[in-house]
Length: 459
Ligand code: ARG
Image (cartoon, rainbow, N blue to C red; front, side, top):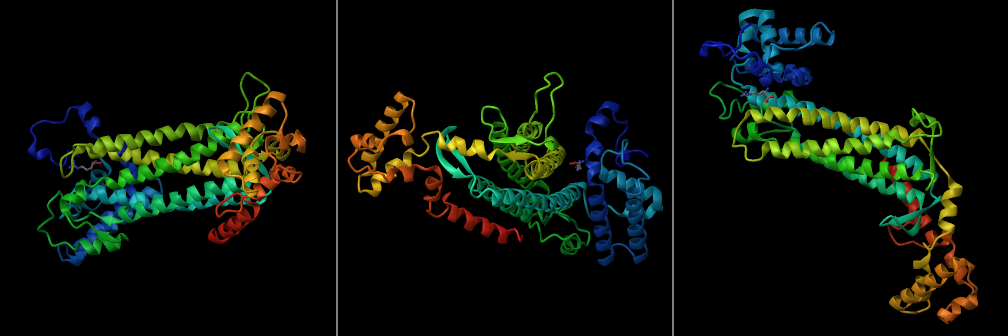
């Protein structure tokens, strides 16, 4: 079959340009959405009497047959069709003949491709929601089992203050919750139907845009036909929400990579999620978090590609927009596989070394703030207390000892308000326990939050 526009042209397309122009090798992913979009369009044309009942049935049946054949693997879309939209139209015509040529009445590929992509993305976002909930559950269970496990908390990657390990994981639950909210918001804008905008100006054919929109489950329709075919904000928003979510996955990945090093030894990788080295027999590599951390860059790259794609592009459809699909497809594929891999890693890939974790918080100065707060409790102004403790830290470092190794008399030399009870305040478990401010790491607070999450996740 020649190109649909061949009557207007004298010559055929250069074969290289034909391939260069084509998008079928990637937009065939949209086949089911394209079929649904066409079925809804044909049904609408039947309703508005643009097509007779027989024509409508013929076209709809033809499209259903193509769908079944596709699902049964009877064909796979390919060149020489330029894209999935032409492919389906051509297939319909070869299947049902002349009537098939009426399908494209009152629409353009411009509004069609926008509709297909939104349908595809809406489904992906719904899948992502399920995957993120699973990920949240895996973090929840880990948190629940580690409320009383201590871990050093860091700022600037320097020991800061000890934390409940559960508190650390609950922080991720919050981040993933924001990711869910962001995707939900993106979904509401994805769920707006451009179909019926035709090429850019609307159409004189009698169409019913609200009918097709509701057939396809869209919440609303675009109000302006030019905007409808020009808008790619939803693509950028989706990749942007994904990029932020990937940054969260990358953050926990980095932490896991550190935790399983010999230097940290906070956790061990189980055999289920680690690989060996081809050369060094002693090694167990954290490939999963490394890959997730690495793949984050891809998604950031897609965001940049899309932002650049729309920059300075004048209104209405421009072929630049064909470049929206691969970043969207790859982003969806990347983020969902990373979420799945992280869920498995959290569920069955990690074992925490509780002893090393508690040894770590026993043997550092991460209780220094508490030493200052001890004096504050005894009415010493915070800044004075802070300076006193600074001197004590220096004194200990010079002697290679910790606060707990000092005698109460030594403490008193730094400030008379120190007393025997200071040692209780210095114990890491008490340090954590005492952080009872709302949202803090105190065990009671953490337990409360674990219970809240249990309800929120319907567990
Ligand atoms: N394959 C095209 C795309 O993906 C479909 C829309 C083409 N429209 C056009 N006027 N050339 O963007």
